[in-house]
Image 1 (spheres, one colour):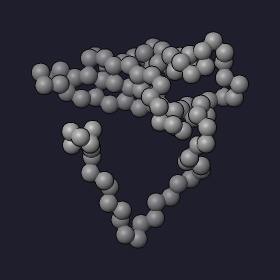
Image 2: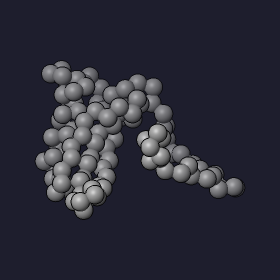
Image 3: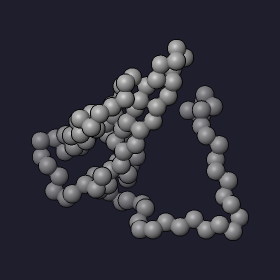
Image 4: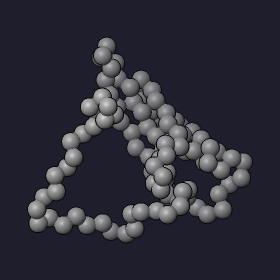
Length: 100
């Protein structure tokens, strides 16, 4: 993205404003906490593409994703979560719960 000048400008820290984090932000091991998010963009022809993905909060690996020109349903999100579990753990379920 840097090579094609697609990065956002860095946020300038406001003087005198303390940024607070509550709780632990950094993780030492993978498969402890996952997160998901989505975005939408318009193509040159005016059509849109909606994308959602699952990330491991430790190593920031994109475990799985789904894209659709019509948006995505709850079934799509459940399938994405199941795909992420299968990709990371195979047939063996995790021994510790994964926070999502």
